[in-house]
Length: 268
Image (cartoon, rainbow, N blue to C red; front, side, top):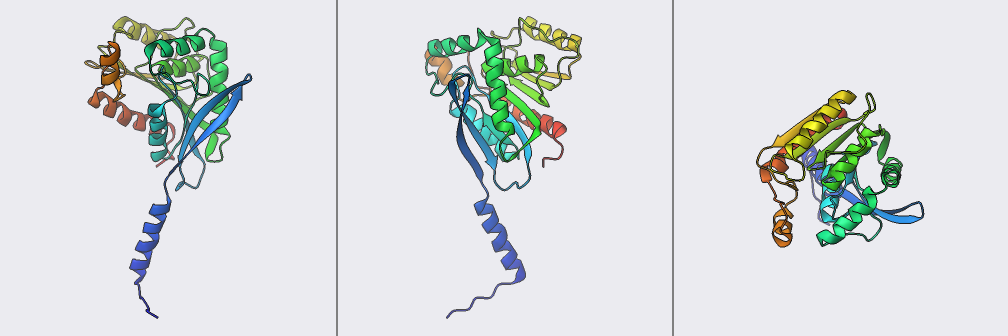
């Protein structure tokens, strides 16, 4: 028999290595029903975190709950949150062409009461997960999803914070004074034709009148969908004003991390 001796330091190092090897971001798809329709979300969390943690909803672009939305949920998990890429369209509804994306989006935006129900149902799924502290929930959204999270903030939804990336800022139902409970962070592009400067200013005026805790960050040269690396290819293929901006992407995520640290200071 070969006997091996380890120093206490060596044993400790081995235990740490084993722990690091076993700890990882876990993911799962969760199917849930809203008014008889099936929806499928994607949940991610770091199993190295033992205590319950804040949950963050991720609302997808108009393409649907695709790989990009799932990746953002995983990035949130790496920061110590439980991320849930919810589904606003219905199970299996993911678009590859703008015509389909537009149809899916319009089906949702034509009935905002139903849209709110879909969001709240996903929020309940996230809040009920064993890793999540149900009293600490936030939401982020991209393009279409940015508009969704801002709409929910306007309604007074019980959220600690919302973040919109290149989302639409206009609305037919502006926030009423005192209604917005969530802290609001908005990232928008100075060269985004879908969100012109006058829309940005009108949004600021609306949030100020409502008494909201708001920060708006404008990237002067950024176009629409600036956080998505696939934007360049999609813009070229479909002749749309979409473009990835590495600086805006990285800086907006850095500021988002700081935003969540302020809201959830106990997450390291």
